[in-house]
Length: 402
Image (cartoon, rainbow, N blue to C red; front, side, top):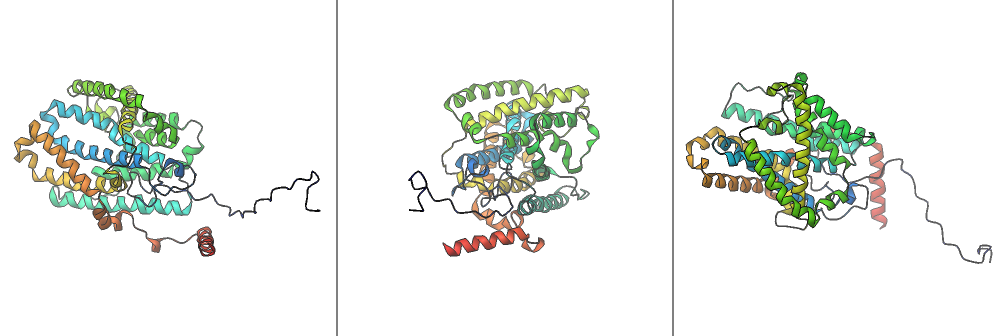
């Protein structure tokens, strides 16, 4: 009777006391932007935002990454064909407006839980910094051997595709700062505008491009699951068709009236031969166009599991490896030796081949071969943190007791 409360009703037992480890609960994050890290990427937006970890990856994001990397490879195949085809140039401009912004936005979205905790810093080093060093050296040696023996090898001057890894390393390191900022996106846009009028920034780590593309990464940090659900509504999918058609018409006009370098974000306005204020206008204009077309692209990305969904886990492999094929074709002079490539049939053929090549490079066998340099564990290079040792011991204890 003494166990009954004064009201005569039996009270519910109190929940067991939970020990506080003093650390933030571990959240699963994607190891690299575009994601080669299948074992680290959350399967759904909920797991990236601190919810219960899901057992499967989110098909929508894997589909988006695969389709985006295919567009990257196709655009590289079109580049030598632009001078002889206005239509190809128009397609090239439209694709360049949104394919890398889409990648960067997804990278920012999956970086939301990044902080300076030791285990996440190690993943940043092994999943981004190490591949950058390896592929920067590999690309430089390849260029020396195939095209230019005088080409300098410099880890401070990214060549061809490796700029993205340098940029991702910098962006992700700054993530905690953007998470505490009151107006992160306006600040990032202001930085991008200032970069576009600052030709003195130089080429070190391709900082001009890092700063001008920063708003897309910050936007990804600000997005939530419902934003991606919103753009995938039927009304948005239907509206995306005329928007893309209008973009193609404008690009067809711009092919002969506009410098495509504005979409590369590599140069300041003064370096492109325009007044400084044009840099600010074009930075904001290209950002707006890129966001609209990226939204349309996301609207068309299927959310269900497709035959290519599993390839989304290997897009970083496809991104970095297809560059050797692109450059080999260029150095071999195939675009000059085969005039048919400059005709509509040849352009379609080059497009299909580019898509097929990058698809193969995203497959599991290729990833197994190159995982040693793309996702090295490198346990020998790091000290194990005391908190992680305690966490592993507790995890083993719970596993044994279960």
